[in-house]
Amino acid sequence: MVMQCTGCGAYRLAAMPGNVEPQPETVQVETIKVGVDVRIELKTGEIKKGEVSAVSGERVALKKVGNYGLEHEEYLWSDIQQIEVYKPAIFASFVTTAVGVFASYAALMIIALTQMGD
Image (cartoon, rainbow, N blue to C red; front, side):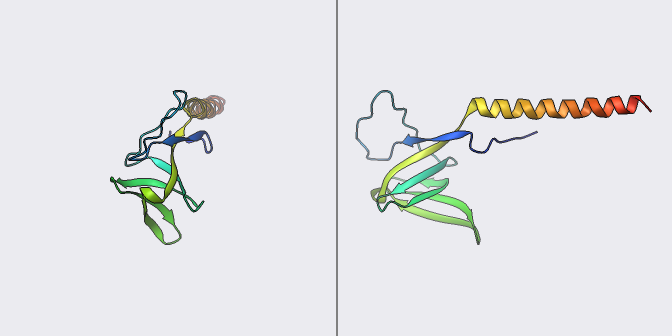
């Protein structure tokens, strides 16, 4: 049984290549790698979301499902104001899974009890 709690997570600031701005020790900076979901804020103010499909010293490539199937977009690091990596909440995932397991168990018990009555 696989479940996902929609909205049970958060975006966290990620480091861009060449970004040498010191971060406070209380800020955990994530690493950008292929396969992670990201949110990019361009210097124009536009927000882009997708899954990282490639990372290089000059750009990052995203893929996402669009109106015409799988779409690929590339953004230069110099055009990006900030990039954030999506991190699912571990506790919320655990609770969602536990509720799903309990519901399945309850359904099986009800079926078993109704079978015993026949």
